[in-house]
Structures are given as C-alpha cells and as structure tokens.
Length: 507
Ligand code: C2O
Ligand code: CU
Image (cartoon, protein in one colour):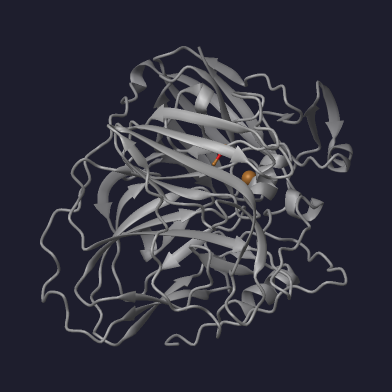
C-alpha cells in the first residue's frame, strides 16, 4: 500500500462514532451514533481482498435484428463480497450476481427485458436515467402494478440516448437496492471514442456485520432522518477490491456508477488526471474535475477517460475523501510489469457526440420553486401528511422525516406538485432548506443544471440526478416532452422512503 491511508476500519469506526462530515461544506452529517445491538459490525480487513481483473459479466442477448431480448430474475443469492477470509453474504440480486448482469445495447435499439420476481415480496425495475415511455418507468402504482411474487413483467422500450445508465427496483428500494438488486445498463454510441478498454465500476457501500452478513436494520429512524444508510464496506463490482490491473500507456474509459443507498463518493485519482467526458450518461465538454475530485452522489454516473501514465510495476491509489477526516483507499491501480503500450498518450479525440435532447428555451420557460425541508437539525416544525398538518414528532413516529413543498409523501396515491404543458420548457428552482445533502432525481427527462447558489454553472451539464449540498440553491431546466406522471425524489433511498418524494405531471 503506497499511501499509508487506512482502508475501511477507520471508516467503520468513524461511522460508529457518528461523525461523518462532508469535508467541503463541513456540515454535520450524522449527529449521533446509534447503539448497536448484540451483533457487531464487521471490522474490516483488507488482506483477503481479491486482486483479480474485473470483467463485466455481460449477458449476451439473443439478437433479433435491432431488438435485443434479455431476461432478469430477481431473487436471493450468495456472493463473496469481502474476500476469502469471510463467509459469503446472502444478498438479493438479479440472476444471483452483484451487480446484476451488464446489459449492453446500441443507441436506438429497442430493448426488451423480461423480469421475473423470485423474491418473497413485490418488486419493479426502473431504468435509471433512460428516457422511457411512462408505462415502462417501473414505479409501483404510479406507472404499473408491482410485479407479484412468481410473476414476470416485460419491459420494452427504445433507448434514445447513448451513455452509462443502471437499473434497480423502485419498490421498497431502500431495502431491495440495499441488499444488492441493481445492475449496469450501457448504451453504446454508434461511433464510440477510441480507447483501449471500456470498463464499468459499479460502486456500492454495505453495512455488514462481523460474519459478512447484511445488517438488517433497514429503515431505522436514525438512517431515515440523518444521512441515510451509510455503510462500512465499499465494493467495486460486488467485491472489496485491492488492485485493479492496468498497463502503462493504455487509455481507459471508466464508467462509474454509484449504486449505494446513501454514500456520496469523492474520488481522487492522485497521480492520474482523469477527464470527465459524460455525466449521468450525457456527454459533457471534456474537462478535469473541480478540485481534482470526482463527486459521485447516489444514482449518479460519471464517465472518465484516463491515460495510465504510471510506470510498469508501480501502484497508484484511488482515494475516497468525500467525508471529512475519513479518507480511505478504494483500490490501487496496479501496473503490470510490461513495457508501456505506447510512449505518448493516445492522440485521439475524447469528446462524445451529444444525445438528441430537446434544448430548453429559457425565454419561454415556466418557473416552479421547490423547497426541501425536514431531517434532524432542520427548521421544519411540521408538514402536510395524508391531507392534514402534522408536527415533526408525529411524523417521525410514522417513520417520516422530509417534505417537498411542505408535503410528506406517503402511501401510493400522490398528487402532482405541478403539471407541465407538454413541449414547454420548465425551470425548477430548488432550495435545500435542510442540514443534509440530497441527490435529487427526475424521471423521464434529463435536465440542464443552470446555476448553483445563483452562479451559472460552467458547462450547464445535462444530468438526471443533481446533488444539493446543505442550504444550497440549484436551478435546472428541461423541455417537458415526455408525457406522464414522473417521480421527482431524493436518491438517498432512506430519505425517499421517509417522505422526500413527489410527482411532476407532463400533460
Ligand atoms: Cu434511480 Cu426513482 O430512481
Ligand atoms: Cu435526501
């Protein structure tokens, strides 16, 4: 290990001490420790980590013209998350794998996926970030009846945009995703940029006990009302990883996906200089990340192009230092003892072709204000719940802690917070009046991020999930061109479960 940085034990210890702080904003993220019961959490050991090459476990579609057909089965499985010194972990997974099979299709393909539910409870699948027709969006009761135990439901839609996406259930997601139900969906450009390797890293964060089993305290009030279920074990493609083999001189396109319930990653590649080429699937002007740190909130994706500029035989750490004083090593880039692939970095363009997104017309936009309140250390005294005003304490007794425009979402029937005329540009001005971070996700559309705290953003990037820091103001704009009722919610899955959810109607 080259850094002397702790791997996970410290992260674990600090989580127990309950002092996770975001290093940038220095906001208190986790106010108090929750006491543990008789079972103890895993004390993390790194030694046993597997140092293998991570190959995406692709499933190979039966191709009928441009109509790839896939099948996924959700059910229990056993996987080795932590390495050979620990028992296997019982998970809920697609096809018994964590992450689920990587689905790869071509931009413009019609994708068809038959999802069979072998869980002991209902489920759905949401195609996060893909601009699907409403009926294929996978939101229980809003866009479909949930898939019952033993049932199969076939999702079928065209994929308009190339890029890095992912799939996950939208039914009790805080537990179903938290137990391992998710997988990558890669939509390939007709003419991809030239790289030596195209690699996907699905990042996750688990709360494991000493025997590597999943702590079953899903949905506890502490997680719901603070920063969500932050865990103690970080995996890359379903494994605690010690080393990722690379070759000097090679160029890698690295697709990062944050599948964690709540953990925000702030990746620092130290001696390497990754270029950001896409965010949430959508191409962006290639640029070095702000502060040399890739901030990846839950549900976000970032595509990087990295030239492996190290020397053969060396190791270079990738560090996550999002939470103050809790930096840990994610993995080492381990250079093979082989002559460099080339002497100079590859001379090839890395700018991706834009997707066919409708450009917002700001001069004709309708503007809506959306305010987030609640959580511990917030100012919220109460909110509307089930049609009546409730004080914060009664809300918390019912497992609710957050509100959007003063309304706590609960139950199945949700009235839209507003209705947009189809084809019209909408600006949403969001205000985070809480002491916590919130990655806000809009279904069915990608939006441009116009400003933060009144300052125009540098690239007006297209995203489907935008992270708001405590007290931050963010403006987004999009053309409401996709008819239907669309979820707009926080992707810290505990916040979503505790009321931070709403619906926007496009009619
Ligand atoms: Cu990734 Cu509404 O979800
Ligand atoms: Cu949130």
